[in-house]
Amino acid sequence: MSFVDLIFLICGAIAIFSGWRVFCTDSMVRASFFLLISFIAVGVIMLLLGAVYLGVALFFMMAVEMMVMALFMVMFMMNPAGLNPMKMVHQDKFAALAGVVAFFALSAVAVFGDFPDQPRPSDLDPVVTLGKELLGDSMLVFESAGVTLLATMIGVVAMSSHRGRYGDANAGSRPPGLEPGGMPAFSGDQEGSSGGHHHHHH
Amino acid sequence: MTASLTNALLVMAILAIGVYLVAIINRAWANALGHSGAGNPFTAPFYSAASLWVAPANTTEAPDAMAWHLAPVLYLTLAAMGLALVPWSQNLVPVDLTTGIVLWGALEPLATVVIFLHGWSANAHLSMLGAYRYVSLGLSYLLVSMFVLIGVALPAESLQFSAVVESQAGLWNVIRQPLGLPLFLLVGLGISFWGPLNFADSNDLAGGTSSESSGRARLVWQAGRAVMLVAFSAIGATAFLGGWLGPVLPGFVWMILKTMVVLAMALLLGQLIPRFSPDRFLTIAWVLLLPLAFVDLVWAGLEALP
Image 1: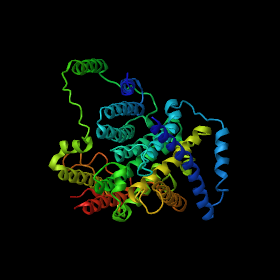
Image 2 (image 1 turned 45 degrees about the vertical axis):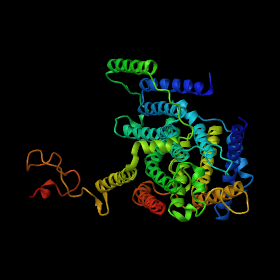
Image 3 (image 1 turned 60 degrees about the horizontal axis):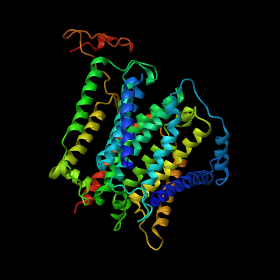
Image 4 (image 1 turned 180 degrees about the vertical axis):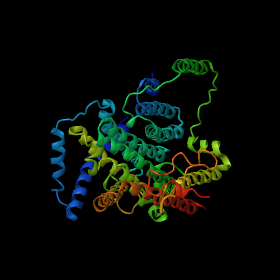
């Protein structure tokens, strides 16, 4: 067994074990980071396969993604900080069955599939070739579109932010009425002394 | 095999010297600026390290034991991986990956994950506040780092750090893309949660993510911060100050000198600038730093046009 084989077996075991732990843990934060460990192990396997860009890109994409996911899941759930135990699975019997079927189907492809034996030419630069293969002549268009899209997203967040230069962006606005033209469920009485009736004009 | 052993020893040596160097320069700046309590720059680091070494390890009620024990080690490991990517001279690159810049870009968010886990796993109020605050602010400047690094990859037409150095033979990136180094330095202070960007372990949270940590685990954590700052300085010197390029002296010496200049600048900023108020920094990061990073990228792109 070569060194590469050994690393592959270790990383494969880590990927499967931590992937399984995702469903056993009782915390959103732990689940996110077990998934991250699993992805990192897969990234190392991709490095072993010579996919030097895709493997490393998987590291940073999954690190950011799992961190954001953990943060937002905790932010939007009724479990402060994610340390309280909670049940992490639903439809577990169906999901387990689907998982086992998918595992064996993919394994069958790996074991019985007829893969072409084309060793990589030694002078091939995998990063450059991958970029040309994925984007080709549209490289500049795609890159510009990517930056523009990000700038747009940030602009939208900035414009829809509640904090403005002259106070809250929603100051003076009122929620929609319960019936057309009617009073809203919350009329703003609790906030100040002015009362809801002063705002009620068309 | 001997080559990789030499490289590993090189990284370990730089790691050990780097921690001491950070402690010395930081205390020297503090003394020069008249900040009290720094002590003798050369001996005081040994006293504080020794006191942490003999202090008993602390534990909290129901921590996440694995993350609690692993976080300091993982943070130091990520910093060491960063050091390994640095081309110290033309022939002395511990790991000359063709996607070195991308791997460095992966180390930053992974460090963010580890810092979060360090604070989260203690199962204590102040450390958890530090963890969540760090992540919610850290995500806002990670993007800045990516754009700045894409900027240096553009003229090199490569994601390899040694190619980035060679692309600066005519003109260093610090002049070609003047916004790059200041932005990168700020990100460095953020990732090693140092000085003005110390949102993880600051005094207002009684030590934040390490408020429950003591003994050797805390020593490793502090060493990791120092090594991360050294790695940032070395990558900054590589990406913006022409790395090993320079007249007369050998490349290795130039690289060390440039790294020390960047490191001294970062530590001076850490001593001079007070910590930003977190909500104000969020505005600064999105409204000022990120658009500046866009400008840097467009600048680099226009400059790289043939």
